[in-house]
Amino acid sequence: MASPGTAIDYPVCLRLQGKRVLLIGAGTIAEGRALQLIEAGARLRMIAPAATATLRRLGAEGRMELLERAYALGDLHGYALVFVATDDRRVSQAVADEARVLGVWLNAADEPDLCDFTLPSVGRRGSITVAVSTSGQAPALARHLRQRLVDQISLHHVQLARLSGWLRERLPRGPDRGRLLRLLVEEDIRGLLARGQRRAAWARIRAELAALGETT
Image (cartoon, rainbow, N blue to C red):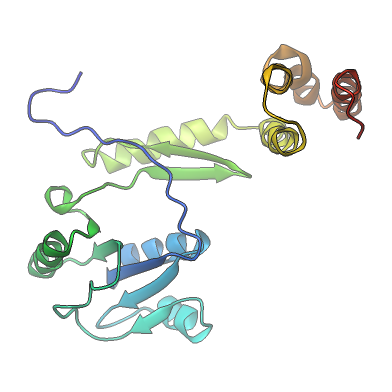
């Protein structure tokens, strides 16, 4: 349980494909944020007085819009999500003040008191995402724990995630689908995949689908 006055984050996974996102700042942290947002499919505009070579390349390739200038009041209009990554507290505070007025959700790197949301340490294997948050209090610990968790994700876990998605699209909702999805993560089919017995696992899945009147 959190101590009195300690804020607890509510974890969510945002789908940013095609969404307009603003990033203000330059340097290593800003570059990392930009790469993550582009990977997530965001329509990114970045405002930075001195961009890195990587950021200029991304702008030239059309993967984001880069404005090489300082932040100015009014830049947040039209955005629902804004990131600021600068080592100038005055700039971060000014961006936060505008965000509050406009009702824009803001993350400020290394300024947890200005944030509406914090960023977990994220690792991915296929469609599996592991995120560890310390509510902005211990980023290094979050990275350490995230890596330990990601190291435990094996190829058969990725295969199980793909199979689950395929079955969810193929079968109608109901107890039969729920039972089959549970079989994937219980020892039966999961164990076969973990031991590298893919043909045996598929044979079991086909048998289950046949019992439901489905064919592969």
